[in-house]
Amino acid sequence: MSATPAEQIMFRALDGDDDGDLLDRFHREVLMTSFSADELDHLDVMARGLRGEGEAQTLASVALGPGDALLGGVVGELYRSEHVLLLAYLAVRPELRGRGIGTALLEHVATQWYANPGVSLAVGEVHDPRRWSETGGEDAVSRLRFYERLGARVLDVPFVQPALDSRRARIEGFLLLAMYAGPEAVVSTGDGESVRADLVGRFVRHYYEVAEGVREPRDPQLVRLLGAIEGRPAIRLLPLAEYERIPLLS
Image (cartoon, rainbow, N blue to C red; front, side, top):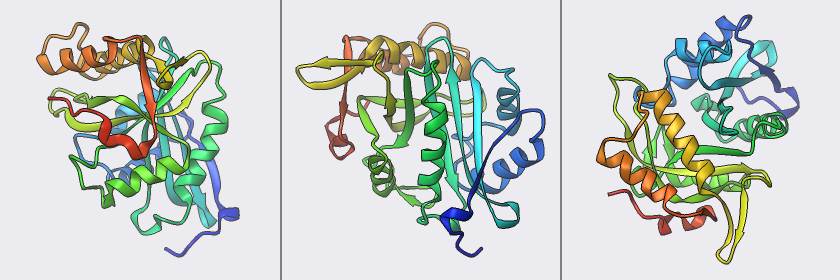
């Protein structure tokens, strides 16, 4: 596929009722080539979320080139009761990476998703280079630098992605990024800017409840994770270049 000039990229927000075929193509042709089976939600889960039938509201936009060529896309999950948006998936066709499509996608949705009055904090999961040197054909350090250029910072807390269903496993070795933090989420401390730990803690609890059906943490790993988050009033926002200061979850 040849390069697509930025001015020829069109963005389309997916509608849960009308865009089933396009969502299927995006999931099959782009997401499945970029994420492991344990990381990626099933197509039917995304479709239900787009229709507003899930506990978290799914948002999705794709980038299209000339002739409606599918270039890439981004998926978000809005946890409405916590006012937290999870940037769940961002992917571009492997042969088109490095051409600014991912940046254009995130900049496009940021003007809409982060402006939603129901969003106080937008977070994203990214592989910790100390545990993952390469994922989905991409260098983990390069991916961090990509998000750094977009203004993201890393929360000073370890993170583990929940198991997306009973047949899949949790994924250790993630960093939790702050893509956007509104004034109601930010706390100024002597250590610099931070976000409210209670807000992050409620989101993580709900995320695990939706994914794993866990209402009360019972296993040691989740107890440690929530203890690291909720055991203080605020969580520092660090430059991405300082990710190695964050302790690994034992």
